[in-house]
Image 1 (cartoon, helix red, strand yellow):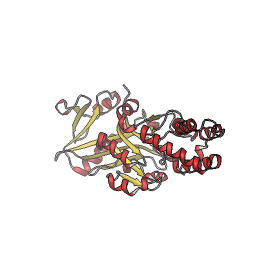
Image 2: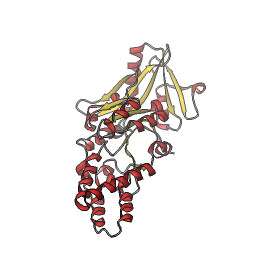
Image 3: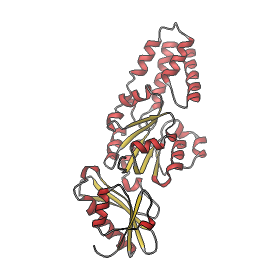
Image 4: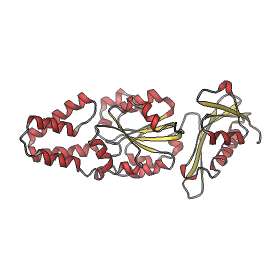
Length: 331
């Protein structure tokens, strides 16, 4: 079993990283030029019928269905080539690749999309998104129904999901609860549908453009009411670590969401981060004890916390996580 990452970022494609509304507009224009208005409208009727039937968009399948109705039309090869060779990289929203790079400083970035098995993977590849996330791509028919598989491939203690569909953000939040931060970029026609906006609760974070995420650091993305967040960083350099604390009981302060940047793991940053976080937590709360939870199979973290005088409390532990506690005094 893979060791859970502290945080994993799940990024949608259509109208989240890539302007799919413009892709559709381009295709409509091309179909009208190649087939005429009436045939173009028939294609989109078939397209919507298949989306209702299958639950995802199927551009090539709709084209095949249309061909079944018009087997002698010579334009199909041209239209098929247009779809397969479309320059998707030209339709990325400004800042999309920068956002992926920005988030990857803290944890794995993963493309999590819905779609067919040919056109959607082609879109992700030709747009450059697959390369940007180092091949971490998951494409399902209904991704909100495959969260166990998502966790199998990319286990994490916390997830951040970025998607233009409030329906999906709500569905995943219902399953993962406080483990998930939802980010809603108001891009594309779904994100501006008044019925949709009133039908579902707001996301944890709403932004107007995907590039707005460049202004969010990890504390902002993982903010929890009542918690204090801290970032360990060197002057003029990228952040090295992140952690939070909140009052667990009147006597104890709890440490959580302790994350060390992947680029500096194994260099003592985790220990330094914990030492500073413990000191800050005790100073701000005057607690007499400090607690935390750690996955039982995280051997590196277990050694670190034991070296900081945390002791296991089995009575408050679970099968997966170990509850640990130490006095607030010096180690």
